[in-house]
Every structure is written in structure tokens, then in C-alpha cells.
Image (cartoon, one colour):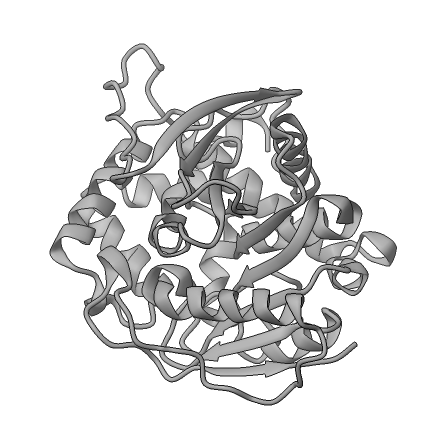
Length: 352
């Protein structure tokens, strides 16, 4: 994307100062400098010392905040850190402007290497799922287990509801969208995002909605927000076109780590039909399907995802366990985005 195709924004000196990034109770933020990027890392101290490390990677347009509900539920299981990918959350753009899947994966690898915490339990959602797949394939030494929530892996027949997001990759579309939505409030934008990403947007509490609107308003003031969105969308589409050993499905087959796959039946961005294909490509994977969930099950139903992850750990510790279908605990407190109760979840284990 050339400079003439970027969204029109005021000079940085004219823009209002973005509000501070929200930090949930018990969380900390720190800045990590790696070759080519400066990354913001959100951490949640574990309930006790000696727990294994976990690392979380968000999706397109998201941030490390997307993982806060799940991190809170797993504080007695793992030592959690979540990254803001370059250009997202509180991380500035990458030095070279490269937002490809390979570049995002490189940033994650360098962050893990800099921390010396690996191997980690690696989590990824959507775009972050594609990034995490690549990391697990090329650096198996850094990954203990892999948990993917609605991973953005290549689809031949994309859902119509996902087309507008894919169009962000087309030069000039981001600019047109910013012009078309110039008068939208942060609240209007958040409603649009929730309708697209949640299976049931009414599950979001008033407090959760206020937090989301605050974060949306902050991001809209960043001069590089739409550039990061458009270039990352283009990087994802480009990754879909790669064949051979660089193809994401081929790399999924190379993943050695025990893998948990989570798919939502009401996902408007990643086809629910892709769940079985993913289960076939990630050998020995555990598949959890949530019929009522949308694209961000770790935000809608974090208790259910946490329960499934605990079962993954038990399976990894005892690989002799059978592949029977089970019903993980679906009751819970999904944090700031839900009321009581949970979905009916089906879990299957495939053997590779």
C-alpha cells in the first residue's frame, strides 16, 4: 500500500493524546524491545511460583486485552503473558512496516527468545491463530502446547459476513471506509464489532461495553491504526495464497505440540465447517465446538475454554488417555462479557 492509499489522518502533533491503555486488576504492562519492533506485553502474575509459562496472540484489530478474561481464569495453571502485535494495542508499528504473517510470527519468536520463558503454552485467536500456527511449525522448541481459537486458516469458500474484513486488504478500501464512517461514534463502532465477533452480543455487560468503547476511542486516535489493519489484512490474504512448505495448512501438519482447537458455531469470520478440516491437519488435536459462540470464544465463554485447556494439559501429561467425546464444564463466569451459564460444548480427540 503506497502512502497515497493510506487513510487520511491529521498530523500526529494535531491528534489528541490517546487515552491510557486499560490494565485489568492484577495485570501489568511492560515494553520489550526486539529487533525490528517494540512490543507491549501484558502479564498476570501466577497464583504461585513455578507454574509453566503461557503466551497469547490476539487477532486482527484486537489486542492483549482480548485475553484478560482467560488469563484470570488460568492464573492457578500457567504464568500468563499476552503480546500486542506491532501496530496494535499499545505496540507501535514495526520498524520496516511489514505486517505479514511471517513478520508477526518473527516478532512473537523474538519476544519469546528475549524473555527466555520458552517453551510456552501458546494461544492464538483468528489472525493470531495463523501466527501461532507458523510459530509452532517453525520453532517447535518454543511451544509446549498450542491452543487455537477460531484460527484464520485458508478457506476456499469464505462466508459473506467475512468479505468486508477481507476487503481491507484491497488498496484504497481502508481510506473509503474511514471516510464513510467518519461520523460514527466509538459506541457505534463497538456495536458493529460485537455484532460481527460475538455469537450473542447481548452477553456483553454494560461495564464491558464501556471498556470496549473506551479502547475503541483510544485506538481511533492512533495515526497508524487503519494502516496496521489494512496491511495485516493484506498479509493474511497473502498467506492464504502461499503453497508448498510455507502454506498454513502444510505448516499445521508440521506442528508437533499437543493442540486444542476451539470453534464457534455462530462465527461470522471463520467458517464453522473448518473445524473438522483443522482437526485432520493438526495431528493428535483436541477439538472443542461451541454452537453458541462467535469468533472470540475466549471472551464469550472463557470458563469453557479454560476447562478445555486444563483437559488438554491432562491429556498431554497422560497421552494414553482415550479419544472419547466428553462434555467439558461449560458453567462459568465469562468475565466482563457474559452473564451466568455457558454453552453446550463437544470435545473430540483425534489421533495422528
